[in-house]
Length: 76
Image (cartoon, rainbow, N blue to C red; front, top):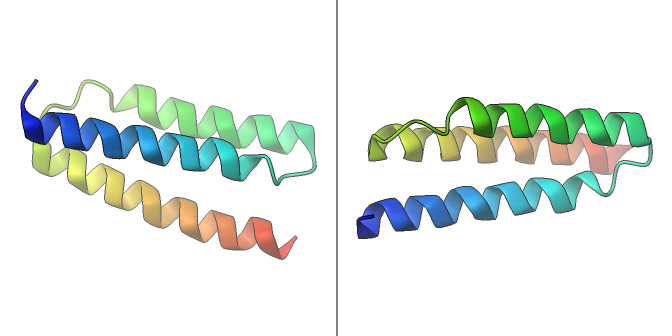
């Protein structure tokens, strides 16, 4: 694994942890599970990606989507 791949892997894991921690704020258990499942499916669907540029894009997009969702969750 190259240094760039290692760094992107670390960023992906950090995003996953941020999502898991953030979903703890959701009071409805069914909604919380649904959000985690949706996030997990996205990570699994893109796990085969090896192009560093595409990985960066996916992580950036995922962060943006999560931050938007987190603002919604905090507003509940």
